[in-house]
Image 1 (cartoon, rainbow, N blue to C red):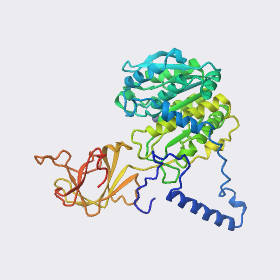
Image 2: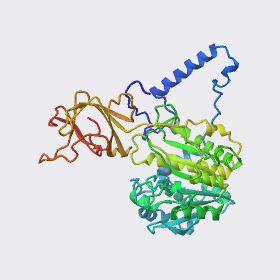
Image 3: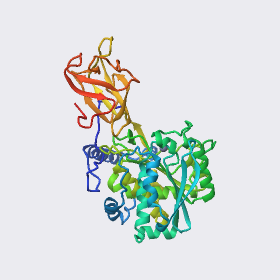
Image 4: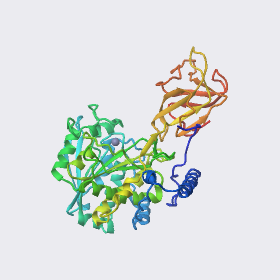
Length: 473
Ligand SMILES: [Zn+2]
């Protein structure tokens, strides 16, 4: 429970060139609290009962890869593929951009491995001649496109920089297999599920969908040593108990109900630890771990069960990065760090604690609270109420729906507007017609903030999408 309404914006800023973790007011606060807690616990006599309460020393995070700065500079100059600035691209658009990068001259092979429910091609791309097989698949949830963008950048790196030491290492020691946009019908609508309405990542047991069948058949044919299951998660997730948003979450999925760690899963934890090491310099405090509960319908859980050391990578959100273009770069770095640790063998022996001690994904904070105003709905008495708005695109603040109305003082939110002394009034057109007459839960977020209850003295307007030219009153 939060004692006060709050809105927190201290995500890393896209423009921040320094890759050093920045001390924000909140982290300084947390550090002081931690220091106070440590001082307190040191002053208290230890008893046998303290064994569980005492937190052990955190596992040291390995150094970031030596190539990090060089590859980040190369990425900005020469790897980011143009034409993918809008993350809601159609699958056909992505293939139009990716296909020229996938020439056999650049070492790629591509073949069709099936068709989606709506007959869109499902394609398998492979590259490299090494003995360690890795399978990366993206966008089995159609509205999770960040890694798909980063895969185009990775194709460019592999194909156009053949003499780069990382590329040479990957080519000689691994064979990389890609299944980009597993769910193209969902991607075409920018929706999670496939055209048949099925969540493809809950289809690993039934294999009822053509997309799930294609992924399983490809996995069976390749029997990969490693897997990368590439997703996006809601930007509202907080890192553990903190108020910090999660930029990237990792998971080495469980392969059984007991959440055991065998050799296969242990290797995935090592690779996840190396990915964490590469992301810490830029995303410290904004990294998390997904829930480890075994899901026999989930592909990541089952590919681990089937013998592939699988890492789930979830691109969350960075405030001020509405199209996830900064997160796309971090996703590229994350994939490359994982792959290079596999090619070089540097993951071997990385303590599982590096991955396991990441905070879990915590609470999901809703997007926008309008606090302290008075709601004026058509033919109803005005009511003093906070209003919560959820967006279909939370980072871009587009597609708003009213998600709650009432006393929301105890509900934190990603952003908030102080509407004290103001009225929320449904929007009327020039003829006085009102499209959405009531500001109630479930209704489109479509209203003026006004100084008067009639909506004449308007200070701010929300028509489902926040106007980027006037984002706040
Ligand atoms: Zn997903």
